[in-house]
Figure (cartoon, rainbow, N blue to C red):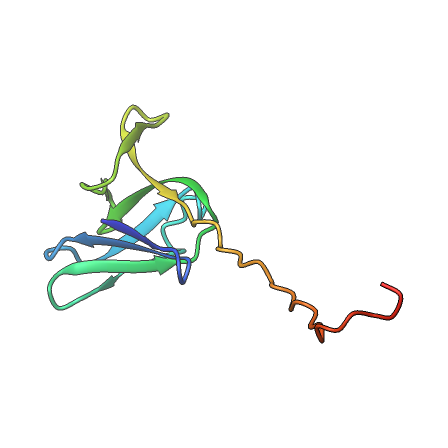
Length: 116
């Protein structure tokens, strides 16, 4: 499962693999380097990693026990050059709301200037 938090701009990757000894998050955002983003295991067997990614589309996979490639069951997939598939995440942040700055209205005394 992948969740993008637009407020913090953090992308959270999570996969439940209670029997795994190690899980690494790999993708085009880290050059497919399995040592760049090792995931941390919770007591429930869920492995988790949080990254701050720029907006865009990223392909990724999980490397389990340093030899088995696993896709995210909840993410769409795209074919890769090796005849298998990579998971896909689209990171989007809504445009920040801009509030128009109001300029205070000029106060008038209600009196007319002489000659007008």
